[in-house]
Amino acid sequence: MDIRQLKVFTAVVDCGSFTAAAEKLHVAQSAVSIAVKKLETDLGLTLFDRGERQIRLTAEGEVLNQQARHLLGAFAQTQQQLRELKGGEQGTVRLGTSAMLGSYYLPDRIAAFRARYPGINFQVNGEGTSRAQEQLLAGEIDMGMINLRKVPAALSAYPLIDEPIVACVARDHPLARRDTIDFATFAAEPLALYGEGYYLRELVDDQCRRLGVAPVIALETNILRLMMAMVLAKEAVGFALARVAAQEPGLKAIPFEQPLTLQLGIAWRKNSYLSIANRLFADFLLLGEDVVER
Image (cartoon, rainbow, N blue to C red; front, side, top):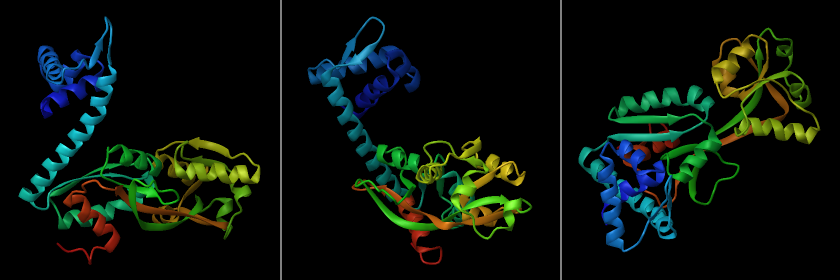
């Protein structure tokens, strides 16, 4: 059993067929079939139940599938560590975050970081803090900006942002004259909100349930610019981090009478290798640009 065989085996599992796995790996189907058959012979086990129209893992195949992914992950981490020892301050930061932080918090910080470490690149996913936590636990990203309300035991998390949440309106909106707003009044306005699964949407729904009211939703989307455009056009009222209103010309932030805040942190998996690139960026965020030195 070797790494190549395990890669072929997991590709067949992921693709659901030998033909699709061959296309994914850019090899002949016969090469995939031979590699899997050789693996079965080496182990003395049948890994796939080969039906007429589909293949399914046997019980033994299920066990190998779980272990193979651990082995392949450990192998990839070892390769990464060796590359870093050879290449120095290079690599890729795979980061999950929210659309708001991706648009209003990270750009300046990533630009300043890359000015210092031009060999480090970024892959940033802006599907929200809940999704970032899921991806972290699944090993799909290296670090995530997550909600600190409930941190799974498998993650290490460090506070980064304690941010007020406000109602957002256009500066010439009738509500813009208010210094504060109660949540029931806010919920009765046409709202531009994130869809279900986003923490800010969950917070709105929770507050409305507590008050026994139903929110009036004019727009539901995960496209931040569309939300802000609707708010600026006075077609809706927004629900956002205070920094969004502060950085958007034409917007007025209205704090809630009972203040709402969002605590976010940077997190990564415990007992998992964190590359030099990721460690440098985490330190950069947590300690500040003037503190972090190699």
